[in-house]
Image 1 (cartoon, rainbow over the protein chains, first blue to last red):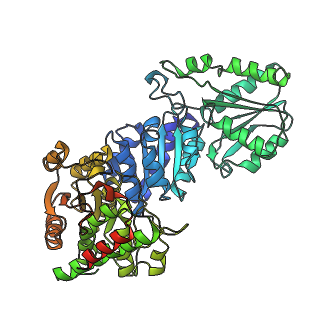
Image 2 (image 1 turned 90 degrees about the vertical axis):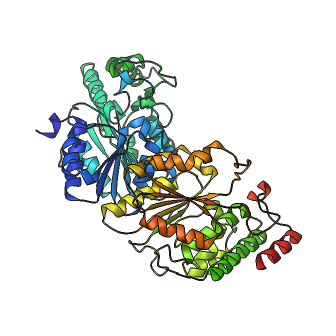
Image 3 (image 1 turned 90 degrees about the horizontal axis):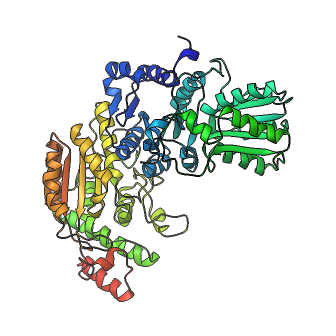
Length: 317
Length: 272
């Protein structure tokens, strides 16, 4: 099976299992979450796999203790619970101790839409960005997801990886140079607008670019899978070559990709038209499919295309 | 590893440590004397009684025993020990309370300190991870955590107790400085602590109760812990402010600095 046909979860965890099967120091811990592609690893390497139960604070503390004694630790669980629930443990015992522990948040964005607001993951990027020296990865296809497992294994400090679910269009090839943490998927230089996205929203960005092409608007598309540290020099240079910037982010307006890009534009005094299309600052006390949430939030493909058109035609200030 | 068998000598060392903590608190006008004095005898038993397998010339020796002083605000009890054993210099200790110097909590920039402290409820889970790493690597080192009694209300401690019991981490020892005073409350008669021993035993631990100011009794209990097949919790019955009459069992001395007259009185009592 090629990576393109793989569920993004399988792409990441198959790579992690491969790493763990070669290095007995790798320990994988979960808060009682099942992942299909880890079942064989659990059977083959029971000493390297711990289901710690629904106890996220202890999961992080134990991970920190193991890492301090030389283990390469990966913890995973539903995103909100491995970040918000145990934030202080991450801050003190992983970050302040500068330990190479990787936290894997399952169910990025609204991928668990039907499970309600406790499972919606729309503030975690801002939350984790606050932690000094925390690296953040948000892959939007299987090849980059597999690469993220390698980055985590080779990393020297704390890392946070958001994993979505389902089969994603392939944007990267395994031979790509991943070191920059971003990729220009559609040329920016000769375009009317540049759309910047990450994770699930990259596929939306490409679909928007396709829709705009019919209307004779050329949209460049950049995928950023490493949100921290983001490749600021590359983005600065891409901003120089762009007529306008649009951020697409399935996150809260504050703290996510929109904030990351606006900080860069402001820091370098880039005076180009810029809009950030994100989730609204409101409680989502609702249950539904991701697409339903996105269309209610103006983040479905037609709505985004319309907003981009308005920007291109200077209908927004 | 320092292994002194003479109880009078160990007691003398404990008095000396208390005196150094007292004088540093007065000199820099900062310190938590009450909770420091309550745990000094436990620290002396661990560091001088042949309990902790550590080597000051190799602070990162992979096979060393791990010790986390979870109640890191009692750091003034540990700093003089680290100086005396050769982990750090007196000059470094003298920076206590200065900008950029040693702080009111422990950090791993200090040789011999395993963990950054300041937030309660973390150390037992971390030590459980360390103890588990030893098991995975078939090594013999132990992980010790010294907790405050008020800290035991943290839910994360109970997550760690459940985990360590299930994993049968018999190389994990939790010590509780049961001085019965939190920052603002007397914890003397709470039902929580009455049920503590039965609760941890039912979760797969051994539990001992010991006079936390009797170094021989502490050492005897640490030996029992070494032969247990379960993780061990030791409730060390202590007195906050132990060793200075006017500080003992007084909430005020959680975080007060003695006046000149109080210093003299405290000094003479500790030197006696």
